[in-house]
Length: 249
Image 1 (cartoon, rainbow, N blue to C red):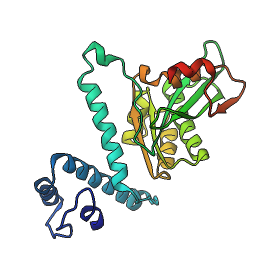
Image 2: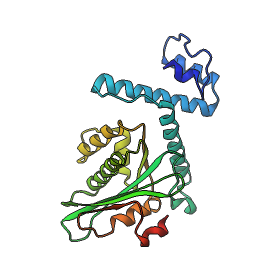
Image 3: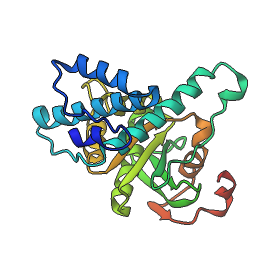
Image 4: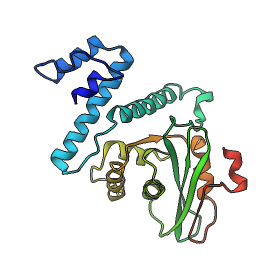
């Protein structure tokens, strides 16, 4: 991993320095990097540790390329979420809005809908690029009436399966179910009824070059929410939005 530290954006000349432990390495990074670069370096260290544990203890074959790119995207999402949280007490910040992803990243919003009195539920996803252009949307009807969080987890899984089918390699998954997003961040602890679905999502996430999960308030998820309200026979998808939903772009 020394090539990560010797190259951009860190450019540490003594990347192969022999230090006694990880704490000493963090101190070295803190001294030699700017605050912003150090935050990125700490995220890179966390990602490397995560991939190492996934291989060692779970036997998973992890893709290690573009660790820095993944960390930059993750840190960007964290900062955006922190800014929203810091101002959440003000009326102006209470209504979130959809934010475009970085270039070359596809942001996929998901939602689940439960029509009243019906014995089915629906899941929907909509993918947009950094220019706020819709590149694909999909709605699927599923039989049964699961718990709301279980349905939201199915919607997240549906979004990721569509991403695989479309051949996207760098994605951001975003939804307004805090319970599901938190589970995707921390992993499965065996307590949630939707644990198996979350586990499958996390397994699929490792097949992408970049994959992150973020929470957004309902106002920032309005397009996916409106899509899931559409009545479909079985499944509907396209690259062009229904005319009555273009106002959400």
